[in-house]
Image 1 (spheres, rainbow, N blue to C red):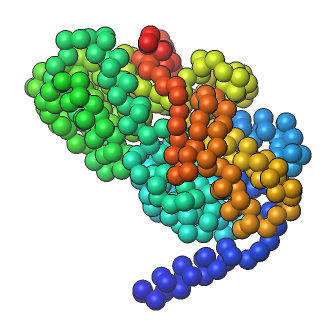
Image 2: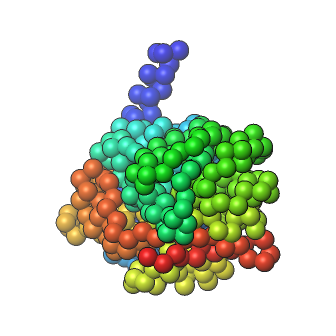
Length: 390
């Protein structure tokens, strides 16, 4: 069995080594979760990427050469992400991969792209260590160490009398495990008491045990690190069972697709964000109207980050052409992947997220973050993230 695995891996990477031109249109891989419970995020990422493809090609693509996004569904687990990455690398010959949706998938699939020397741009991977997986891995999603504490500070501005906090996290997801560690450190830094920690699963739908324990502890605030489906269901059950205190949600709550899950019970939940559709910068002012025209709603954070990821790759492709004097469509795919990765990192980009910088490790520096409260509309299915004042 071991010999078979080694041979299969050797064959896979040998297949990626054949020299051949990139061609036109330039293929860029999008590997996100379009099925399972992760689809609540992946759907928004697909939408954002499609807007980027439309806008970029309408402006001439990469100096006259159009791009073509190649979509692969990763599902919600590591095996799906690995399969999607392998298809994009060896079959579709993409010049770069944008994805996967979850940090847990990134830890499994990104090493494959790194070994094949294919640039990966993470659109939504915020766990510690993602950008450090390898030299071909970068991300445009700010780590939660920078984002999460902002939500706690705004929550305390709303209710300065908070003292006892319940922490909830999905123990079977790497991102949520990482995020709750950051939240718990931030809670202690604010001088608050963690009265209890409740563990859940991203597959859970019944939270009676956890909700009963939280109500019994009489806490002032609940801080949750969950994905949209499980998090939405737990918020709904907390409110229906009578919890009236503050609720702070992590990055998994940054999806309007959560609104139909939790309905009106989601109103008031506090969420820190790396993006706001109300951000006033030239890139966002161009992105939002096109997105609203295509999808009849404001873009969510996951959409804006997917758009930004595509833009980063295209800006870097233009930089490769400028520096090499060659048309990227005529370059050898392996040669271009290497040059493209060098162009992606250590660069500054103007995006709907504002100005971002990717350092030599592929880690993002972002200047502006936001904190909002969810407000559900009267229909109980739609809503908005309303910005809280500074």
